[in-house]
Amino acid sequence: MIQVLNNLIQILVPIAIGCVLPIMIVRMHNRRKESEDQSRTQIIMALIEKNPEMDIEETLKKFTPERKPKLLKEKLLNKLLWGNIASLIGLGLIILDICICVAGGADSDLFWQIGCPGAILIAVGIAFILNYIVGKKMLANEIELEQKQLTTKA
Image 1 (cartoon, rainbow, N blue to C red):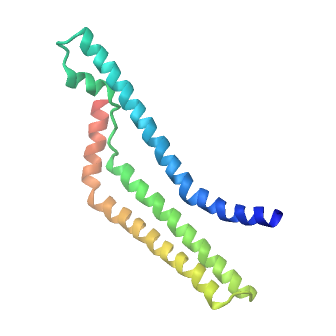
Image 2: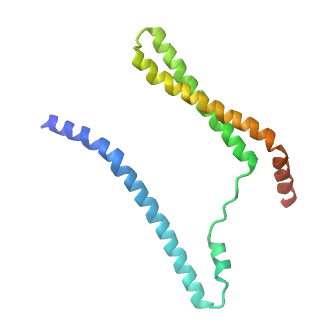
Image 3: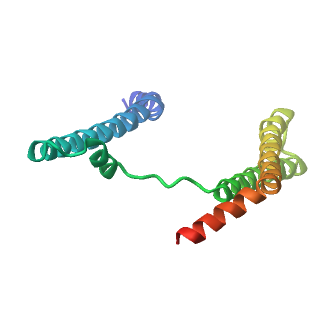
């Protein structure tokens, strides 16, 4: 009986995590968006009933949250951040792979399973860092203009 339950758990847990959980997350997200849209619609309908001559487009703009566009500097720093993260994780995997090989407990499969993803992550990290460096040089004037615009608005 216990063996059957263990086998059932070993089958159901991956199915629940791999299939049911993502479906439930998407469903909850869609329900929340639908609820927001429905409440926004009800509010606008009530406003239109009370004041039929109201500018609908202006009212809709007030109810939709305004997203502040990311600055070029923020985008570049984000690339630098992800480049550093990817490089450090890749370097950690390479170091782990070397330590396992030195300890003598490694076969060739383990070497490729840990070393290759580490090398790929280092390459991706270096690409992000190079993208940051080149972007910083190329967009220096645009970044300066954005900073001036921000200071004049404030």
